[in-house]
Length: 551
Image (cartoon, rainbow, N blue to C red; front, side, top):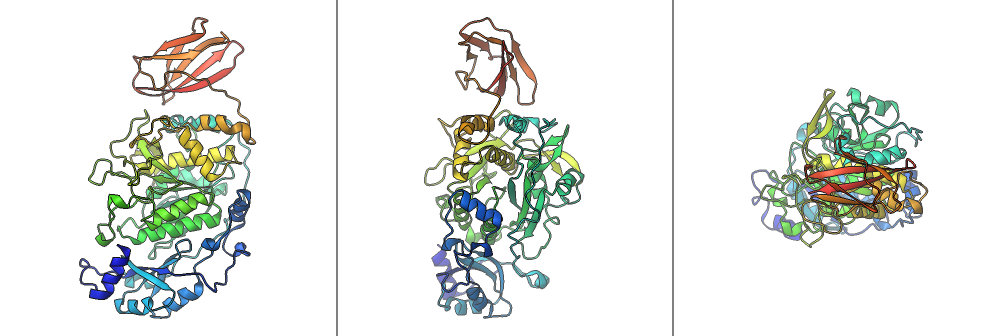
């Protein structure tokens, strides 16, 4: 289809396009020959943090990592004064340009290093001419790494259910709150974030490392849309008794790759460049609450379900590469579960990423959450988190809730950073697989929940022995799990003194001093469906925990 569009354009002109003809094009390049960059001098295009990660996990620096040849960019721009470079992708070896005069396309196609031209948008940038240049990549964090020695447990306030469903609060209690980790957030704007009282401690503590605005007519991520503000709040806020996010000690970098005012194919190009910037910064985790299926303002870029294959979309290909280059990639599945599209979008169909569906705090799938599988049959979403009535901070210092996989993604992304902090010897792909394996239905995945609700603390406990960390709260296995009426707890040492069950909002719903038998059975048939955290106390005051799903 890409080939067809570019040839069709040159053969019969622009009359086939609806009302507004394209003005922006993705130019595919043939090579990186004679580039001034070299894999032997990677510090010219990767930060020290990124290079340290490559060395740590033995990730090779290849020609794919070399920036697009600047000589090629200059030759394209030289063909017309109105041509502007909007974004580039070194991994795809593409450049996306603004070219309002379509007669210049033939000259571009004639360049010996150009292999394809694909229309991607019909922007009119003439009214904002001075801001047309692509954003410069700052590949060095604005502040050095900091280490915060904080071990005080949190009062999670209204946000307790959305972290407790993952046992993330237990991970925090072990001291893993995202300290020294870098989370890069890709979104459509952080309106009011820089003035919101809830976020001021982040600036004061040096946890906001910077931002880049890729949208050509904007130059400040803190103006415009508020979506990134509420998304980031679920991870970053630390306001005890009100809301504590899932990674309150992490560092953050913001990239605006989305234009909420329109839906055009070029936004996938911006997404791909944002992914590469995140890699060059040395990001540990990215959160992207963005997804693409159809483009109402540029319908010639629309996809079909057959394209949900992880390779058709430029954003999906970039997401796969990012996950393989040492970044845990969290992507919201989408909110199309009840409409005609139904399935996940791009780049959620990528390989080696965590695509996140939405559930309520009881673990029930949200009706709107986009479903899997991919067209080639892979399990999607990968995991599910809380995206129904998710507690978050809105502009204007307003505490509220919101619905959407856009909220489920960052709740999970923050805990991914905490888990990787706890298991620093694991690679990004290993961390993502460990998280899948901790899911509530890993052995029986489905197209709604994927591998289910991950238990981040259980994942930590299972793998801590081969890392640096040690855990202090052991778990106990219970069965059956999921259950309907009864739960059985092994008591082989005849030392269990008390059994307790807590709902996801922290309420004690069951407490019993059992008889000393080898197996203790408790009745749960009268409890509402959902997840429960259990605790047993032994005669020597040892505490063990478990998690059970009541169906």
